[in-house]
Image (tube, rainbow, N blue to C red; front, side, top):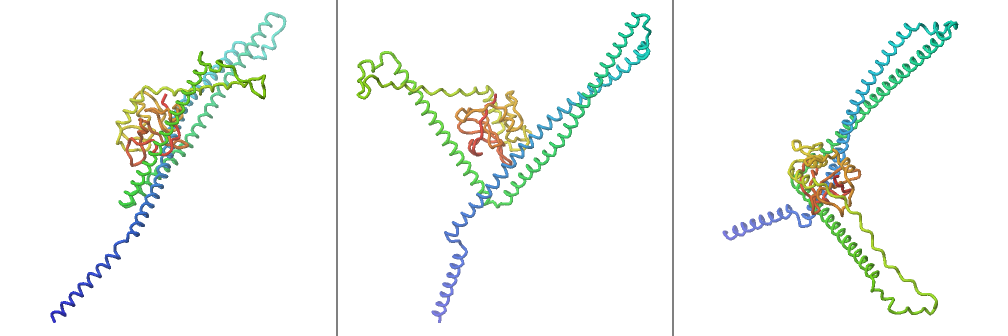
Length: 410
């Protein structure tokens, strides 16, 4: 009996073990299922990274447009102040011309009588008649001159008032554009934050890994392109040096080997000799790049003091944080160099150079139209204020994408 019970207990234990094994087998994913999960996570991370990049690019462009409207409004307000001052001066000229005209007419008519009286002067005394006609002519000329001056003053005043109205209307239009740009900027930033915050920690980590992978790949491509450019430049320089050496050797005295023996006549044309092939002219030297600004080292040093400062759209000071162009403007201002506020303005204000001529302190631009800028620090790296949620940092110039232009601060 004991043996039967023992057998039953053993059977029940075996069945329990089998049940647990089956549950574990069904609960745990197979290697194929785990691989599918990993690939799905990677795909979601890549898709989210794409969307975040698009939103960040949109925010950067909206920030650029917003800053341009700020500059436009500042310029318009300055012009409006100037126009209001011109209106005040024009009004004073009108008032003065009207007062002068009134005083002149009263005095002349009181002293000389009416024009009709002057015309009716007797011709008995010819000298007196001539004098009166001269006075009448003077009166008419002065009146016409005053009338012209008054009309010109009034016309100038009207033009100034019309100009003021146009500028005030333009201000309202720019304000509308500014509000629209601000709303696009804030919507893009909020959408980016929402997307990232809604993702779970595992997906957030995958997105960050994808971003780092992309930046590393972009940096690798940028380094490869730089190495390729340097190799091409070295080959061109070597070829140029070889061509110059060959040319000098051919033209040097005492090295003319063709004069040591007469040339053999050609069997087909005995009376002619084959023309000598001239040595190729050396390739022209490339134009030297413009000199770097003396403040480049200081501007880089100033920018590095802001490492770790968080991005702030519209920001241009250490107290608020920086956007990309704000950091460039502030850093160069520390060495006494003024730059425009926007990255597009900075692109226009700097001298274009090629990537092969880039030096520390040069500005690196991205996008067409331009929407981002960083400062080259050497070794294929730049310092910039990247985007919302990221601090001022040093990273590869290829991490943003393709460089659309390089500018040297003048």
